Length: 317
Image (cartoon, rainbow, N blue to C red; front, side, top):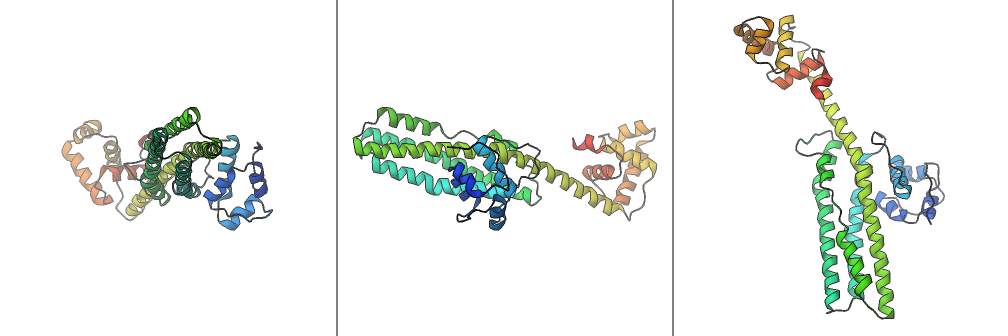
């Protein structure tokens, strides 16, 4: 029976398992080995190289639905990534083949209904495998790039969330067929009941896995995306500042022209706005490029932000 409480770093690790035996799979996914005696969660996590805050976040979410705040910056994305990878390996390499083997041992060979059940299970296994392989091929490398400080312009976690579909429909259909239409003798019925129990456990496990991705992993990635974007922008601004430290200073008119350019004005519009000729605008632009060694609008925008010529929030918002 589950004990509903928020577990903390000072609680004993054995108490979490005693209160909620289903967390044994969670320990395995986090890479936590058994044999930890009466040590606390904090002690076990430190010894085994696991971020205790992230571990407890997942534990408290799975046990009693305690959802972390989307602004929680203490959650370790790298720890979650390894947890999800290990969960995939457990499910694809152990759970799916194990249940298929049990179904084969239980069902009558050559029976039409048995063949239908095996076909449904194989379709379900393919769907789940495809789903997890997509994450491993697309989402996980993206997250690793973010952790390395790299932005990927053609992908983000919103794209993943939009395509994160439910994979349990075929499994539900399979359970119902077995329960409603598959008569068995006493011994086989015991075997089938045990296999059904495993299928129900797998369905619950997969649902929990998907919920951790949606409610813990995805928000943590969103935070990481914003951090990487901010850090990279700040780095570019610093680079611009450093590159112009030793250059010839700009005149007030040249600063005004930079602001106009960043706001999207053409040479003609700048000339009209500042009451000067187009030829003068072109001359000023040439001098700006020479002094700053900046030849792109993006570079001028960063320079303008760094030197408080424009409001950063307007440009980056």
